[in-house]
Every structure is written in C-alpha cells, then in structure tokens.
Image (cartoon, rainbow, N blue to C red; front, side, top):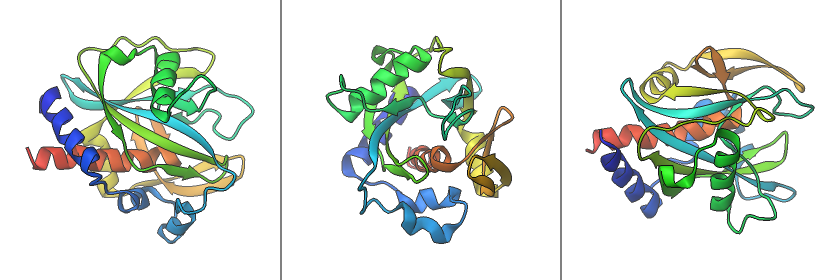
Length: 215
C-alpha cells in the first residue's frame, strides 16, 4: 500500500470516529476484566499528554518508530514508548504537544509527515496521565536525531510482525517498581512493548490492518 492510500484510509476512519477503542485496547490488558478501570468517564486528577504514531514505509514494509527511554527516577524509566510527553505551557493544543515532543525526542519535523488526527485516549493508572495518541503518515525517508538526555535508542516496529504477535497473544513477566506482572507483550527488536503503549498500538494496528482489507 502506498503512502497516499494509507493516509486516505486512516483519514476517513478518524474523521468518522470509526475507531475500535477499548475493543482493541483490551487485547493488550494484563487482565481483560480490568477494562473498566481504564474507562475515560472519571479523569479526576489525571494530567494530559500526547504521543505520535508515525506510520513509516520501508522496503521491508510499514513500521512505527518507538523509543526506549533513558533510566531515571520515575514510573516509566527504561520502558519502550511512542515519541511524546506531557503538555507544556507553550502548547496551544494536544496536537501541538505530540508534534513538539516528536521533534524534541527523535528529531522529526512536522513537514516530514501528514498528520491524520487523534484516536482513542488511554489512561495510565500508575502515573495518572491520560495519553492522547495522534496518527501520522511519513511522506518519505526519515532521518532520526535522538535526544540522548531522554532517549536511549529508537526501535522500528514492523506493523505486520506486531499484528501477528498480537494475534498469537504472547505474554511475559515484567519487573516494575510496583511488582512483577505477567502481561501481554509485543516484541520489537528484543524489547518488550506492554501496558499503555501496547494498548495504543493495538488500536492503531487494527486501523492499519483494516486499511489493507478495504483497499
């Protein structure tokens, strides 16, 4: 599928609000019965953040850039995530946050991609953030420039491979500050993607998969 075809398909779904939402998210929940804990009805005490899901076409197929965060004294130290972060005072909109953080963390300017729009937000219970994911499609080759203060390395998650793993439903024991948990994971270049990032990817990848079926 060419860049323009994927872009048009994603734009249509996002514009119509035809999103899989929690039905996609629950595929990557540690326990499906916990889905109501992630309800967006009660956001009292939660802070806004935004991330970028950037579909990028390589010879090997479509992929999504992910980052491994540096080690720091916080809940998401050393974890795999999408480029993004919390809302800053300079941000007029959540879209501004996603665009700014993408440039700051991986050096990709907004003229390098076509922004589609936002998909279903996800609550992060442990750090009290509500993540607003934005979807974009790269126009051409990307030249990454990582912020070494925040980012250890970049990973390119192949969309077909990640979809295949989600279908198989693999899990792994993850060691966190809150304890050890057996959770659904997506393996990307030997790293485990889980939690909120995996939930966000589940929805984005389902939209990607549907784009192929409906082309």
